[in-house]
Amino acid sequence: MAASWDPIWETVFTTQAWGKYPGEDLIRFVARNFYKVPNRSEIELLEIGFGTGANLWFMAREGFTVHGVEGSPSALKMALDRLNVEVPDWRGELRQGDMLSLDYPNNRFDAVIDNEAIYANSFEHSQAMYKEAHRVLKPGGLMFSRMFTDKTTGYATGQQVGPHAFMVDTGPMAGKGYTRFTTRKCLTTLFSPFNLLELQLISRENRLGEKVSEWIAIGQKATAE
Image (cartoon, rainbow, N blue to C red; front, side, top):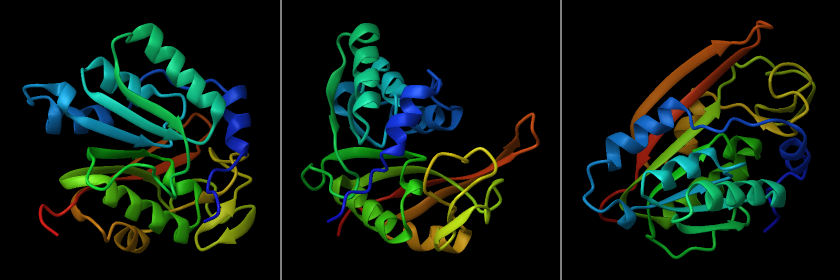
């Protein structure tokens, strides 16, 4: 199977500053579902496409066992360096890899997190990635996925490269390679392996008037299949 990771992200990660802290929605997801577990180290959380590792840093600091798959070697190094310095007793493993083929056994993780990573792939590859995430989740495990909607500035600009996908030349995703925007109908298809528990639509504008519109979808793997 062809690799999904776009090498442009190696350039992006090494030339741009990235936030050091997770978003409020991810914090809320983790807290609501896992903070009351008596032994947090027994909870295994996987982030796919973790970038420079802000979410992993937070989850490791809170005592969870963290795993991650990232295509960029520079981002992987940044994430590991921060964990090793700031959370020296962290548990888990980070590795370079591809979201199309997760090198983990079936039914391994309590939650899988996609914080705007899967969107940077074709619809067909994205379907395969959600199926892989579903495969490695434990029965009853949770999927957290954040993705850009078609109301985000940049939609339908630049070169169209697939259904709802563009090499955009306007807005916050300009210069960041393949960008697939997710309509409500597409989300239903992509999330079909899961029971959709919660769906949020959030939006904001930056000082340039550019709009960022995002879905935050939370799904669950069936407890018995």
